[in-house]
Amino acid sequence: MTSISFRDLCKADLDAVLNIERRAYPLPWSQKMLETSLGKDDCFGVERAGVLIGYAFVSYVLDEAHLLNICIDPAYARKGFGRKLLQYTVSKAIQKQANVFFLEVRESNRQAIDLYFSEGFNEVGVRPNYYPAAQGKENAVLMTLELSVDLQV
Image 1 (tube, one colour):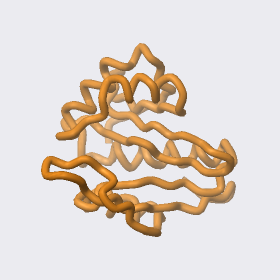
Image 2 (cartoon, rainbow, N blue to C red; image 1 turned 90 degrees about the vertical axis):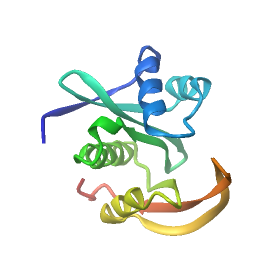
Image 3 (cartoon, rainbow, N blue to C red; image 1 turned 180 degrees about the vertical axis):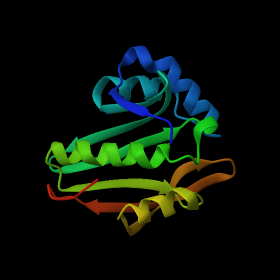
Image 4 (cartoon, rainbow, N blue to C red; image 1 turned 30 degrees about the vertical axis):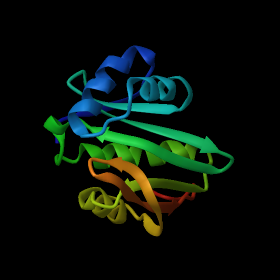
């Protein structure tokens, strides 16, 4: 894998994040949602050769980390960058002393669900009609990872 680096994102990254979001998802987050997250959540970017190729937004409540959005530019998908970004976000949650890391993922996104399982996440439930979909709504699979300062990522 080509060398990558991680960095905190800021509002100046909005256009790059928005472009990736729109290329990756048929029903992307709005510009306002992305802008709000860039201002208040932990926002991490992954770069390759100085170009932003993905991002993750994580919020914290007490000892819980919640992965709000993780996305890799489709041009760089299926090359391990998403796994590396997920591992990085989990390591940041451990540094913040979170005890549990949770996320929702579209029920139809088997590739992401398989990735989360391979990284130690467990399926703990379903949120019915959670995501907007082209034909109404789609369920979300709720997944969690128990964290420990001893967890190796």
